[in-house]
Length: 324
Image 1 (cartoon, rainbow, N blue to C red):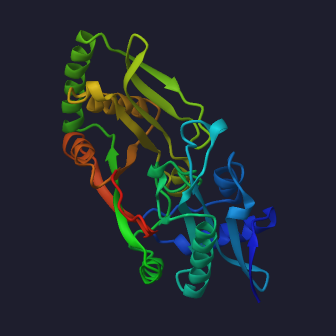
Image 2 (image 1 turned 30 degrees about the horizontal axis):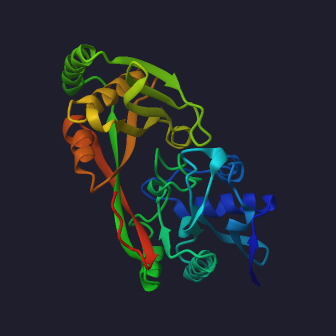
């Protein structure tokens, strides 16, 4: 007997098991515990059990789907205002061989969202739209085990249901071991810091109180009371537990519009790299939209990050155009 049930805490052991079975061997696989799923999803401020449906067959969890609406959650947790026009499927988990389970989960999630007014539904790592990023940090700095090539069955099913690709992403990694390139980057950092001082910019590093990422810190460049450039970084605990390497994720690289073109994005990245290395990081990991050529050149050409896995966000509905 098959049944879709709203999430209950009794489902967590089965959800953890099916997650680890479904994603084992994938390019970004990290084995999860019940505590990981509880912390990343169930204990988040905007979690709604009705939006996490669990497929049960003969009392065994065989899959689950978590969905909701675009919101302004990143800007203010207390003023969350979901936008019912845009639905998001945060994660869909089932064994690759269980296409029927995938069909049931995908159709039910899309049906629930469209019945509530969604004109577009996005599937995949669509954190860029301001959704609740429940699973961020599990598989990377800004990465969920979403629609990468290893999920051929779900990609095929989504195509059959009219989903189309609207964005493509890549993960990249940089080893922080001493090298000739590292020495050259230190020299560039010194030059850029000298320019920053000429512009009366001051560097500071602060801790971030984040509901999504543990032990996050940010490097900021400021003048008076204005922050003109920043990036955040912090340890990727699940990866370290799985692979035994201390990898930090880089997020939120930002430069104020009036200050762009002066090398400040590169400077805050270099400062973050230095701070992460001092905190014990062996490597850095980041997530970048492939259409963002300025960021792509900074990370790969200027700083030496090596491109890694790629995956996509898909969309179905009336509005399938997207601009990063």
